[in-house]
Image (tube, rainbow, N blue to C red; front, side, top):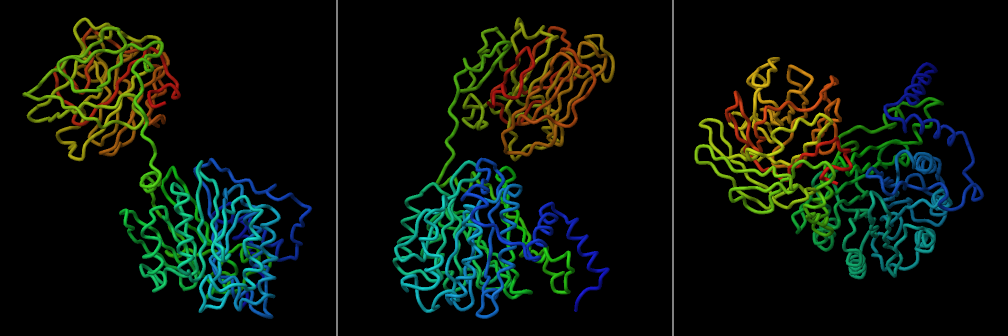
Length: 608
Protein backbone atom coordinates (compact mmCIF):
# COMPACT_ATOMS: atom_id res chain seq x y z
CA UNK A 1 0.00 0.00 0.00
CA UNK A 2 1.40 3.43 -0.93
CA UNK A 3 0.90 6.78 0.74
CA UNK A 4 -1.24 9.71 -0.35
CA UNK A 5 0.13 13.08 -1.45
CA UNK A 6 -0.50 14.55 2.02
CA UNK A 7 1.22 11.63 3.69
CA UNK A 8 4.14 12.05 1.32
CA UNK A 9 4.56 15.65 2.38
CA UNK A 10 4.25 14.79 6.07
CA UNK A 11 6.87 12.08 5.78
CA UNK A 12 9.26 14.36 3.94
CA UNK A 13 8.82 16.97 6.66
CA UNK A 14 9.35 14.36 9.34
CA UNK A 15 12.55 13.14 7.72
CA UNK A 16 13.71 16.72 7.29
CA UNK A 17 13.13 17.55 10.97
CA UNK A 18 14.25 14.31 12.53
CA UNK A 19 15.51 13.59 16.01
CA UNK A 20 19.17 13.88 15.10
CA UNK A 21 20.97 16.32 12.84
CA UNK A 22 22.48 13.53 10.77
CA UNK A 23 19.02 12.23 9.93
CA UNK A 24 18.05 15.62 8.59
CA UNK A 25 21.15 15.87 6.48
CA UNK A 26 21.06 12.29 5.30
CA UNK A 27 17.50 12.70 4.03
CA UNK A 28 18.68 15.38 1.62
CA UNK A 29 21.76 13.42 0.68
CA UNK A 30 19.80 10.25 0.01
CA UNK A 31 17.28 12.13 -2.07
CA UNK A 32 20.06 13.30 -4.31
CA UNK A 33 21.37 9.77 -4.57
CA UNK A 34 18.06 8.27 -5.60
CA UNK A 35 17.53 11.12 -8.08
CA UNK A 36 20.40 9.79 -10.12
CA UNK A 37 23.24 12.08 -9.08
CA UNK A 38 26.46 10.66 -10.46
CA UNK A 39 29.03 9.18 -8.13
CA UNK A 40 32.10 11.34 -7.55
CA UNK A 41 34.88 10.71 -10.00
CA UNK A 42 38.50 10.06 -9.17
CA UNK A 43 39.33 13.63 -10.15
CA UNK A 44 37.13 15.06 -7.39
CA UNK A 45 39.58 14.37 -4.62
CA UNK A 46 42.89 12.72 -4.09
CA UNK A 47 42.78 9.55 -1.99
CA UNK A 48 42.30 10.47 1.64
CA UNK A 49 41.64 14.13 0.91
CA UNK A 50 38.14 14.11 2.38
CA UNK A 51 38.63 11.38 4.97
CA UNK A 52 40.23 12.94 7.99
CA UNK A 53 38.76 11.64 11.25
CA UNK A 54 39.71 13.40 14.47
CA UNK A 55 42.06 10.76 15.79
CA UNK A 56 42.48 12.39 19.20
CA UNK A 57 38.80 12.95 20.04
CA UNK A 58 37.48 10.62 22.71
CA UNK A 59 34.23 10.32 20.74
CA UNK A 60 34.27 8.40 17.46
CA UNK A 61 32.05 6.13 15.38
CA UNK A 62 32.57 2.67 13.91
CA UNK A 63 30.09 1.97 11.11
CA UNK A 64 28.85 -1.55 10.40
CA UNK A 65 27.10 -2.86 7.27
CA UNK A 66 25.67 -6.39 7.49
CA UNK A 67 24.48 -8.80 4.79
CA UNK A 68 23.76 -7.03 1.49
CA UNK A 69 23.30 -10.25 -0.51
CA UNK A 70 19.76 -9.61 -1.78
CA UNK A 71 20.87 -6.38 -3.41
CA UNK A 72 23.41 -8.29 -5.51
CA UNK A 73 21.50 -11.35 -6.67
CA UNK A 74 21.97 -12.32 -10.32
CA UNK A 75 19.79 -10.19 -12.61
CA UNK A 76 18.28 -8.10 -9.75
CA UNK A 77 21.35 -6.11 -8.80
CA UNK A 78 20.62 -2.72 -7.18
CA UNK A 79 23.59 -0.67 -5.98
CA UNK A 80 21.61 2.41 -4.89
CA UNK A 81 21.06 1.44 -1.22
CA UNK A 82 24.75 0.62 -0.69
CA UNK A 83 25.81 3.81 -2.43
CA UNK A 84 23.44 5.85 -0.25
CA UNK A 85 25.00 4.40 2.91
CA UNK A 86 28.52 4.99 1.65
CA UNK A 87 27.67 8.55 0.71
CA UNK A 88 26.39 9.03 4.23
CA UNK A 89 29.80 8.03 5.57
CA UNK A 90 31.52 10.54 3.33
CA UNK A 91 29.10 13.39 4.01
CA UNK A 92 28.84 12.81 7.75
CA UNK A 93 32.24 11.38 8.49
CA UNK A 94 33.32 14.63 10.11
CA UNK A 95 30.34 15.40 12.36
CA UNK A 96 30.01 11.73 13.35
CA UNK A 97 33.81 11.28 13.46
CA UNK A 98 33.45 7.99 11.57
CA UNK A 99 36.80 6.23 11.72
CA UNK A 100 36.07 2.92 9.95
CA UNK A 101 33.42 0.76 8.24
CA UNK A 102 33.14 -3.01 8.64
CA UNK A 103 31.09 -5.18 6.30
CA UNK A 104 30.03 -8.47 7.92
CA UNK A 105 29.95 -10.74 4.88
CA UNK A 106 27.43 -12.10 2.41
CA UNK A 107 28.12 -9.17 0.17
CA UNK A 108 26.45 -11.14 -2.64
CA UNK A 109 23.83 -13.84 -3.00
CA UNK A 110 25.61 -16.28 -5.31
CA UNK A 111 29.27 -15.28 -5.18
CA UNK A 112 29.16 -14.66 -8.93
CA UNK A 113 31.70 -12.48 -10.72
CA UNK A 114 29.03 -10.04 -11.97
CA UNK A 115 27.63 -9.61 -8.48
CA UNK A 116 31.06 -8.89 -7.04
CA UNK A 117 31.84 -6.52 -9.88
CA UNK A 118 28.74 -4.48 -8.98
CA UNK A 119 29.36 -4.20 -5.24
CA UNK A 120 33.05 -3.75 -5.84
CA UNK A 121 32.23 -0.77 -8.03
CA UNK A 122 30.04 0.72 -5.28
CA UNK A 123 32.86 0.46 -2.75
CA UNK A 124 35.22 2.33 -5.07
CA UNK A 125 33.57 5.45 -3.70
CA UNK A 126 35.37 4.74 -0.42
CA UNK A 127 38.59 3.77 -2.20
CA UNK A 128 38.72 7.08 -4.03
CA UNK A 129 38.47 9.01 -0.79
CA UNK A 130 40.82 6.86 1.25
CA UNK A 131 38.14 5.64 3.65
CA UNK A 132 39.19 2.81 5.92
CA UNK A 133 37.00 -0.28 5.67
CA UNK A 134 37.06 -4.07 5.87
CA UNK A 135 35.08 -6.85 4.23
CA UNK A 136 35.00 -10.60 4.75
CA UNK A 137 33.51 -13.60 3.00
CA UNK A 138 30.17 -15.03 4.07
CA UNK A 139 28.74 -18.38 3.09
CA UNK A 140 27.00 -16.85 0.03
CA UNK A 141 30.22 -15.23 -1.18
CA UNK A 142 32.19 -18.47 -1.46
CA UNK A 143 31.55 -22.19 -1.54
CA UNK A 144 30.11 -22.63 1.93
CA UNK A 145 31.62 -26.06 2.53
CA UNK A 146 35.17 -24.71 2.23
CA UNK A 147 37.53 -22.97 4.65
CA UNK A 148 39.84 -20.04 4.03
CA UNK A 149 42.11 -22.48 2.17
CA UNK A 150 39.66 -22.67 -0.77
CA UNK A 151 41.90 -20.84 -3.23
CA UNK A 152 40.80 -18.49 -5.99
CA UNK A 153 37.28 -17.04 -6.08
CA UNK A 154 35.41 -14.00 -7.46
CA UNK A 155 35.40 -12.65 -3.90
CA UNK A 156 39.18 -12.72 -3.77
CA UNK A 157 39.43 -11.18 -7.25
CA UNK A 158 37.48 -8.10 -6.10
CA UNK A 159 38.10 -7.84 -2.36
CA UNK A 160 41.42 -9.58 -1.99
CA UNK A 161 44.52 -7.99 -0.38
CA UNK A 162 45.51 -6.15 -3.57
CA UNK A 163 42.48 -3.90 -3.21
CA UNK A 164 43.55 -2.68 0.22
CA UNK A 165 47.29 -2.31 -0.20
CA UNK A 166 47.02 1.44 -0.67
CA UNK A 167 44.77 1.99 2.35
CA UNK A 168 46.37 3.61 5.41
CA UNK A 169 44.31 1.38 7.69
CA UNK A 170 45.24 -1.92 6.03
CA UNK A 171 47.53 -3.95 8.28
CA UNK A 172 47.83 -7.13 6.26
CA UNK A 173 46.16 -10.38 5.22
CA UNK A 174 46.64 -14.08 5.76
CA UNK A 175 48.58 -15.89 2.98
CA UNK A 176 45.31 -17.24 1.58
CA UNK A 177 43.90 -13.67 1.35
CA UNK A 178 40.61 -14.39 3.12
CA UNK A 179 41.48 -12.97 6.54
CA UNK A 180 42.73 -9.46 7.17
CA UNK A 181 43.42 -6.97 9.92
CA UNK A 182 43.03 -3.23 9.87
CA UNK A 183 44.47 -0.60 12.21
CA UNK A 184 43.00 2.82 12.80
CA UNK A 185 43.73 5.56 15.27
CA UNK A 186 40.97 6.96 17.49
CA UNK A 187 40.85 8.54 20.96
CA UNK A 188 44.60 8.96 20.80
CA UNK A 189 45.41 5.26 20.47
CA UNK A 190 45.54 2.36 18.01
CA UNK A 191 42.54 0.06 17.49
CA UNK A 192 42.20 -3.07 15.36
CA UNK A 193 39.43 -4.62 13.29
CA UNK A 194 40.22 -8.31 12.79
CA UNK A 195 38.12 -9.50 9.82
CA UNK A 196 37.87 -13.29 9.66
CA UNK A 197 36.56 -15.64 7.01
CA UNK A 198 33.31 -17.59 7.14
CA UNK A 199 35.25 -20.69 8.17
CA UNK A 200 38.77 -20.62 9.57
CA UNK A 201 41.23 -23.41 8.91
CA UNK A 202 43.93 -24.33 11.40
CA UNK A 203 46.19 -22.02 9.39
CA UNK A 204 43.61 -19.25 9.74
CA UNK A 205 43.48 -19.58 13.51
CA UNK A 206 47.27 -19.61 13.71
CA UNK A 207 47.45 -16.47 11.57
CA UNK A 208 44.86 -14.64 13.71
CA UNK A 209 46.76 -15.51 16.88
CA UNK A 210 50.00 -14.27 15.33
CA UNK A 211 48.38 -10.93 14.48
CA UNK A 212 47.13 -10.52 18.05
CA UNK A 213 50.53 -11.45 19.42
CA UNK A 214 52.17 -8.86 17.19
CA UNK A 215 49.86 -6.14 18.57
CA UNK A 216 49.64 -7.09 22.26
CA UNK A 217 48.42 -3.69 23.50
CA UNK A 218 45.81 -2.99 20.82
CA UNK A 219 42.08 -3.38 21.60
CA UNK A 220 40.36 -5.50 18.96
CA UNK A 221 36.93 -5.61 17.34
CA UNK A 222 36.56 -9.04 15.74
CA UNK A 223 34.27 -9.25 12.71
CA UNK A 224 33.12 -12.46 11.09
CA UNK A 225 30.02 -13.75 9.37
CA UNK A 226 28.76 -16.29 11.91
CA UNK A 227 29.07 -16.27 15.68
CA UNK A 228 25.93 -15.24 17.63
CA UNK A 229 22.75 -16.98 16.51
CA UNK A 230 20.28 -15.26 18.88
CA UNK A 231 20.26 -13.48 22.22
CA UNK A 232 22.80 -15.06 24.59
CA UNK A 233 23.34 -18.00 22.22
CA UNK A 234 26.31 -18.83 20.00
CA UNK A 235 26.10 -21.10 16.99
CA UNK A 236 28.21 -24.26 16.95
CA UNK A 237 30.78 -22.48 14.80
CA UNK A 238 30.55 -19.41 17.01
CA UNK A 239 31.28 -21.53 20.06
CA UNK A 240 34.32 -22.96 18.31
CA UNK A 241 35.52 -19.47 17.47
CA UNK A 242 35.02 -18.46 21.10
CA UNK A 243 36.86 -21.51 22.42
CA UNK A 244 39.76 -21.41 19.98
CA UNK A 245 40.37 -17.70 19.76
CA UNK A 246 38.18 -15.13 21.50
CA UNK A 247 38.13 -16.29 25.12
CA UNK A 248 41.92 -16.54 25.37
CA UNK A 249 42.65 -13.09 23.95
CA UNK A 250 41.65 -10.32 26.31
CA UNK A 251 42.23 -7.73 23.59
CA UNK A 252 39.01 -8.81 21.85
CA UNK A 253 36.31 -6.83 23.65
CA UNK A 254 33.65 -6.71 20.91
CA UNK A 255 32.62 -9.11 18.13
CA UNK A 256 30.26 -8.35 15.26
CA UNK A 257 28.60 -10.88 12.97
CA UNK A 258 25.71 -11.25 10.55
CA UNK A 259 24.26 -14.38 8.90
CA UNK A 260 21.33 -15.01 11.26
CA UNK A 261 18.35 -12.83 12.00
CA UNK A 262 16.81 -11.06 13.84
CA UNK A 263 19.49 -8.95 15.52
CA UNK A 264 20.65 -10.14 18.94
CA UNK A 265 23.31 -9.82 21.59
CA UNK A 266 25.31 -12.02 23.91
CA UNK A 267 27.88 -11.43 26.64
CA UNK A 268 30.58 -13.90 27.64
CA UNK A 269 33.32 -13.70 30.26
CA UNK A 270 36.78 -14.47 28.93
CA UNK A 271 39.58 -16.22 30.83
CA UNK A 272 40.83 -12.86 32.10
CA UNK A 273 37.47 -12.36 33.83
CA UNK A 274 36.37 -9.57 31.48
CA UNK A 275 33.15 -9.27 29.53
CA UNK A 276 33.21 -9.65 25.76
CA UNK A 277 30.22 -8.17 23.95
CA UNK A 278 29.07 -10.26 20.98
CA UNK A 279 26.57 -8.67 18.59
CA UNK A 280 24.50 -10.14 15.78
CA UNK A 281 23.52 -7.59 13.12
CA UNK A 282 21.53 -8.61 10.05
CA UNK A 283 18.55 -7.02 8.30
CA UNK A 284 18.35 -8.98 5.05
CA UNK A 285 14.95 -10.33 6.11
CA UNK A 286 13.51 -6.82 6.25
CA UNK A 287 12.14 -4.63 3.47
CA UNK A 288 14.31 -4.30 0.33
CA UNK A 289 16.80 -6.85 1.63
CA UNK A 290 17.71 -4.55 4.50
CA UNK A 291 18.35 -1.65 2.09
CA UNK A 292 22.07 -1.63 3.05
CA UNK A 293 21.07 -0.44 6.50
CA UNK A 294 24.02 0.60 8.65
CA UNK A 295 24.62 0.36 12.35
CA UNK A 296 26.59 3.13 14.04
CA UNK A 297 28.70 2.28 17.08
CA UNK A 298 29.36 5.64 18.74
CA UNK A 299 32.23 5.27 21.21
CA UNK A 300 32.43 7.81 24.04
CA UNK A 301 35.44 7.13 26.23
CA UNK A 302 34.66 9.93 28.67
CA UNK A 303 31.18 8.57 29.40
CA UNK A 304 32.36 4.97 29.24
CA UNK A 305 29.72 3.92 26.75
CA UNK A 306 29.09 2.76 23.19
CA UNK A 307 25.78 4.12 21.91
CA UNK A 308 24.42 1.97 19.09
CA UNK A 309 21.93 3.15 16.46
CA UNK A 310 20.60 1.60 13.26
CA UNK A 311 19.43 3.66 10.26
CA UNK A 312 18.81 3.36 6.53
CA UNK A 313 20.23 6.35 4.62
CA UNK A 314 18.65 5.06 1.41
CA UNK A 315 15.12 5.04 2.84
CA UNK A 316 15.69 8.39 4.52
CA UNK A 317 16.67 9.77 1.15
CA UNK A 318 13.45 8.56 -0.45
CA UNK A 319 11.27 10.54 1.95
CA UNK A 320 10.94 13.45 -0.46
CA UNK A 321 9.26 11.19 -2.98
CA UNK A 322 7.07 9.60 -0.33
CA UNK A 323 7.59 6.39 1.55
CA UNK A 324 5.57 3.28 1.10
CA UNK A 325 4.10 1.37 4.03
CA UNK A 326 7.14 -0.84 4.60
CA UNK A 327 9.66 1.96 4.17
CA UNK A 328 8.01 3.94 6.94
CA UNK A 329 8.76 1.08 9.31
CA UNK A 330 12.39 0.84 8.23
CA UNK A 331 13.53 4.48 8.20
CA UNK A 332 15.14 4.01 11.61
CA UNK A 333 15.02 0.93 13.82
CA UNK A 334 14.32 1.53 17.51
CA UNK A 335 13.94 -1.95 18.97
CA UNK A 336 16.05 -3.08 21.91
CA UNK A 337 18.28 -5.11 19.60
CA UNK A 338 18.78 -2.20 17.18
CA UNK A 339 19.23 0.84 19.39
CA UNK A 340 20.96 0.40 22.74
CA UNK A 341 23.98 1.36 24.81
CA UNK A 342 26.85 -0.75 26.09
CA UNK A 343 28.60 0.52 29.21
CA UNK A 344 32.35 -0.09 29.24
CA UNK A 345 34.97 1.36 31.54
CA UNK A 346 37.53 1.35 28.75
CA UNK A 347 40.56 2.04 30.93
CA UNK A 348 39.64 -0.76 33.32
CA UNK A 349 38.61 -3.14 30.52
CA UNK A 350 41.92 -2.66 28.67
CA UNK A 351 44.11 -2.63 31.79
CA UNK A 352 44.94 -6.33 31.52
CA UNK A 353 46.76 -5.96 28.21
CA UNK A 354 47.47 -2.22 28.13
CA UNK A 355 47.56 -0.84 31.67
CA UNK A 356 47.72 2.90 32.16
CA UNK A 357 50.97 3.60 34.01
CA UNK A 358 50.41 4.90 37.51
CA UNK A 359 51.38 8.54 37.84
CA UNK A 360 54.58 8.86 39.81
CA UNK A 361 54.66 10.79 43.04
CA UNK A 362 55.84 14.38 42.66
CA UNK A 363 58.31 16.03 45.01
CA UNK A 364 56.76 18.30 47.61
CA UNK A 365 58.99 21.12 46.40
CA UNK A 366 57.11 21.20 43.08
CA UNK A 367 53.86 21.93 44.93
CA UNK A 368 55.32 24.97 46.67
CA UNK A 369 54.21 27.51 44.09
CA UNK A 370 54.33 31.27 44.80
CA UNK A 371 51.83 32.20 47.48
CA UNK A 372 51.72 28.78 49.15
CA UNK A 373 50.57 29.36 52.72
CA UNK A 374 50.49 25.72 53.84
CA UNK A 375 51.02 22.29 52.30
CA UNK A 376 50.45 18.99 54.08
CA UNK A 377 50.87 15.51 52.65
CA UNK A 378 50.83 12.08 54.21
CA UNK A 379 53.55 9.93 52.71
CA UNK A 380 53.80 7.92 55.92
CA UNK A 381 51.94 7.31 59.16
CA UNK A 382 51.48 10.24 61.52
CA UNK A 383 53.30 10.11 64.85
CA UNK A 384 52.16 13.24 66.64
CA UNK A 385 53.02 16.11 64.29
CA UNK A 386 52.49 16.71 60.59
CA UNK A 387 54.96 19.26 59.25
CA UNK A 388 53.84 22.10 57.02
CA UNK A 389 56.02 21.51 53.97
CA UNK A 390 55.70 25.13 52.88
CA UNK A 391 58.11 26.04 55.67
CA UNK A 392 55.69 28.65 57.01
CA UNK A 393 55.28 26.93 60.36
CA UNK A 394 51.66 25.81 59.99
CA UNK A 395 52.33 22.41 61.51
CA UNK A 396 49.48 20.10 62.55
CA UNK A 397 49.02 18.12 65.75
CA UNK A 398 46.74 15.14 66.34
CA UNK A 399 43.74 15.64 68.62
CA UNK A 400 42.07 12.44 69.86
CA UNK A 401 38.42 12.30 70.91
CA UNK A 402 37.04 9.31 72.80
CA UNK A 403 40.28 7.38 72.34
CA UNK A 404 40.18 7.66 68.55
CA UNK A 405 43.29 7.58 66.36
CA UNK A 406 44.42 8.16 62.78
CA UNK A 407 45.45 5.40 60.42
CA UNK A 408 47.51 5.51 57.24
CA UNK A 409 47.04 4.06 53.76
CA UNK A 410 49.02 4.01 50.54
CA UNK A 411 45.71 4.59 48.75
CA UNK A 412 45.52 7.94 46.96
CA UNK A 413 43.86 9.89 44.15
CA UNK A 414 45.53 8.91 40.84
CA UNK A 415 46.53 12.56 40.25
CA UNK A 416 47.60 13.30 43.80
CA UNK A 417 51.21 14.47 44.20
CA UNK A 418 51.80 12.45 47.39
CA UNK A 419 51.16 8.72 47.40
CA UNK A 420 49.51 8.27 50.76
CA UNK A 421 46.49 9.28 52.83
CA UNK A 422 45.34 9.49 56.41
CA UNK A 423 42.43 7.36 57.57
CA UNK A 424 39.96 9.25 59.75
CA UNK A 425 37.50 7.10 61.67
CA UNK A 426 34.99 9.60 62.95
CA UNK A 427 31.67 8.65 64.52
CA UNK A 428 28.91 11.03 65.63
CA UNK A 429 27.20 9.45 68.60
CA UNK A 430 29.00 8.89 70.81
CA UNK A 431 31.58 11.26 69.33
CA UNK A 432 34.80 9.44 68.62
CA UNK A 433 37.80 9.76 66.33
CA UNK A 434 40.83 11.97 65.79
CA UNK A 435 41.51 15.08 63.75
CA UNK A 436 44.37 17.46 62.99
CA UNK A 437 44.73 21.04 64.21
CA UNK A 438 47.28 23.78 63.45
CA UNK A 439 49.60 24.66 66.30
CA UNK A 440 48.77 27.69 68.46
CA UNK A 441 51.26 30.10 66.88
CA UNK A 442 50.67 29.04 63.25
CA UNK A 443 50.63 32.11 60.94
CA UNK A 444 47.64 30.56 59.17
CA UNK A 445 45.46 31.07 62.23
CA UNK A 446 45.33 34.84 61.74
CA UNK A 447 45.43 34.94 57.93
CA UNK A 448 42.35 36.54 56.32
CA UNK A 449 43.28 36.19 52.60
CA UNK A 450 41.90 39.57 51.61
CA UNK A 451 43.40 39.31 48.11
CA UNK A 452 42.13 35.79 47.42
CA UNK A 453 42.90 32.17 48.18
CA UNK A 454 42.83 28.59 46.86
CA UNK A 455 42.14 25.63 49.16
CA UNK A 456 42.64 22.15 47.70
CA UNK A 457 41.95 18.75 49.24
CA UNK A 458 41.75 15.12 48.10
CA UNK A 459 39.28 12.82 49.88
CA UNK A 460 37.58 9.44 49.67
CA UNK A 461 34.60 8.09 51.59
CA UNK A 462 34.39 4.34 52.36
CA UNK A 463 31.49 2.02 51.64
CA UNK A 464 30.34 2.13 55.29
CA UNK A 465 29.99 5.94 55.33
CA UNK A 466 26.67 6.58 57.05
CA UNK A 467 24.90 9.97 56.89
CA UNK A 468 23.40 9.42 60.35
CA UNK A 469 26.86 9.23 61.92
CA UNK A 470 29.26 10.79 59.39
CA UNK A 471 27.50 13.70 57.68
CA UNK A 472 28.69 17.30 58.00
CA UNK A 473 32.23 16.47 59.02
CA UNK A 474 34.73 19.08 57.89
CA UNK A 475 37.49 18.23 55.46
CA UNK A 476 39.16 21.60 56.09
CA UNK A 477 37.70 24.10 58.53
CA UNK A 478 38.53 27.10 60.69
CA UNK A 479 37.68 27.38 64.38
CA UNK A 480 35.94 30.43 65.78
CA UNK A 481 32.30 31.40 65.49
CA UNK A 482 30.42 34.16 63.77
CA UNK A 483 29.34 35.45 67.17
CA UNK A 484 32.94 35.70 68.38
CA UNK A 485 33.79 37.71 65.27
CA UNK A 486 30.83 40.04 65.74
CA UNK A 487 29.08 38.63 62.68
CA UNK A 488 25.62 37.67 63.85
CA UNK A 489 23.90 37.05 60.51
CA UNK A 490 22.59 33.47 60.21
CA UNK A 491 23.54 31.07 63.02
CA UNK A 492 26.21 32.81 65.18
CA UNK A 493 27.48 29.44 66.48
CA UNK A 494 28.50 28.15 63.05
CA UNK A 495 32.26 28.08 62.42
CA UNK A 496 33.94 30.87 60.47
CA UNK A 497 34.79 28.55 57.58
CA UNK A 498 34.24 24.88 56.75
CA UNK A 499 34.58 22.70 53.67
CA UNK A 500 32.22 19.90 54.69
CA UNK A 501 30.27 16.97 53.29
CA UNK A 502 26.50 17.02 53.65
CA UNK A 503 24.24 14.09 54.48
CA UNK A 504 23.92 13.61 50.69
CA UNK A 505 27.73 13.64 50.33
CA UNK A 506 27.65 17.04 48.68
CA UNK A 507 30.73 19.21 49.28
CA UNK A 508 29.84 22.56 50.82
CA UNK A 509 32.06 25.59 51.40
CA UNK A 510 30.34 27.72 54.06
CA UNK A 511 32.18 30.71 55.49
CA UNK A 512 31.92 34.31 56.63
CA UNK A 513 33.68 36.75 54.29
CA UNK A 514 35.18 39.95 55.64
CA UNK A 515 32.54 42.00 53.82
CA UNK A 516 29.44 40.04 54.92
CA UNK A 517 27.59 39.53 58.20
CA UNK A 518 26.05 36.27 57.05
CA UNK A 519 27.38 32.99 55.70
CA UNK A 520 28.34 32.64 52.03
CA UNK A 521 27.81 29.09 50.69
CA UNK A 522 29.03 27.16 47.64
CA UNK A 523 27.43 23.78 46.96
CA UNK A 524 28.69 20.86 44.89
CA UNK A 525 26.90 17.75 43.69
CA UNK A 526 26.76 14.33 45.37
CA UNK A 527 30.14 12.58 45.34
CA UNK A 528 29.86 8.76 45.34
CA UNK A 529 31.50 6.49 47.88
CA UNK A 530 34.72 4.52 47.33
CA UNK A 531 35.97 7.09 44.83
CA UNK A 532 38.77 9.61 45.17
CA UNK A 533 37.73 13.23 44.68
CA UNK A 534 39.60 16.51 44.36
CA UNK A 535 38.01 19.74 45.63
CA UNK A 536 39.26 23.26 45.14
CA UNK A 537 37.80 26.46 46.58
CA UNK A 538 39.07 29.49 44.66
CA UNK A 539 38.50 33.12 45.63
CA UNK A 540 39.84 35.89 43.39
CA UNK A 541 39.40 38.64 45.97
CA UNK A 542 35.79 39.21 44.94
CA UNK A 543 34.01 35.93 44.20
CA UNK A 544 34.36 32.32 45.28
CA UNK A 545 34.13 29.26 43.01
CA UNK A 546 33.99 25.64 44.14
CA UNK A 547 35.50 23.04 41.77
CA UNK A 548 34.94 19.26 41.84
CA UNK A 549 37.53 17.35 39.81
CA UNK A 550 38.52 20.67 38.24
CA UNK A 551 34.94 21.41 37.14
CA UNK A 552 33.03 24.43 38.52
CA UNK A 553 29.79 23.56 40.30
CA UNK A 554 26.47 25.21 39.47
CA UNK A 555 25.73 26.68 42.91
CA UNK A 556 28.47 29.28 43.17
CA UNK A 557 27.10 32.55 44.63
CA UNK A 558 27.33 35.73 42.59
CA UNK A 559 27.60 38.04 45.62
CA UNK A 560 30.95 39.59 46.45
CA UNK A 561 32.97 37.67 49.03
CA UNK A 562 36.25 39.14 50.28
CA UNK A 563 38.64 37.07 52.38
CA UNK A 564 37.91 34.75 55.32
CA UNK A 565 37.05 36.14 58.73
CA UNK A 566 39.41 35.14 61.56
CA UNK A 567 39.49 35.39 65.33
CA UNK A 568 42.98 33.91 65.52
CA UNK A 569 41.96 30.31 66.23
CA UNK A 570 43.39 27.16 64.55
CA UNK A 571 42.48 25.44 61.31
CA UNK A 572 41.31 21.81 61.37
CA UNK A 573 41.69 18.87 59.02
CA UNK A 574 38.96 16.25 59.47
CA UNK A 575 37.14 18.14 62.22
CA UNK A 576 34.08 20.37 62.42
CA UNK A 577 33.10 22.61 65.31
CA UNK A 578 29.82 24.10 66.44
CA UNK A 579 29.78 26.78 69.16
CA UNK A 580 33.57 26.40 68.98
CA UNK A 581 33.34 22.82 70.25
CA UNK A 582 34.27 19.78 68.19
CA UNK A 583 30.98 18.36 66.92
CA UNK A 584 31.87 15.94 64.09
CA UNK A 585 34.92 14.08 62.80
CA UNK A 586 35.48 12.94 59.23
CA UNK A 587 35.09 9.27 58.30
CA UNK A 588 37.25 8.47 55.29
CA UNK A 589 40.65 9.21 53.79
CA UNK A 590 42.31 12.56 53.27
CA UNK A 591 45.16 13.07 50.84
CA UNK A 592 47.26 16.15 50.13
CA UNK A 593 45.93 19.50 51.32
CA UNK A 594 47.26 22.83 50.09
CA UNK A 595 46.29 26.44 50.85
CA UNK A 596 47.56 29.21 48.58
CA UNK A 597 47.04 32.92 49.26
CA UNK A 598 45.88 33.73 45.73
CA UNK A 599 43.43 32.48 43.14
CA UNK A 600 44.81 29.62 41.03
CA UNK A 601 43.66 28.64 37.57
CA UNK A 602 42.56 25.02 37.10
CA UNK A 603 45.80 24.35 35.24
CA UNK A 604 47.72 25.06 38.46
CA UNK A 605 45.73 22.71 40.69
CA UNK A 606 47.62 19.81 42.27
CA UNK A 607 45.94 17.42 39.82
CA UNK A 608 48.02 18.89 36.96
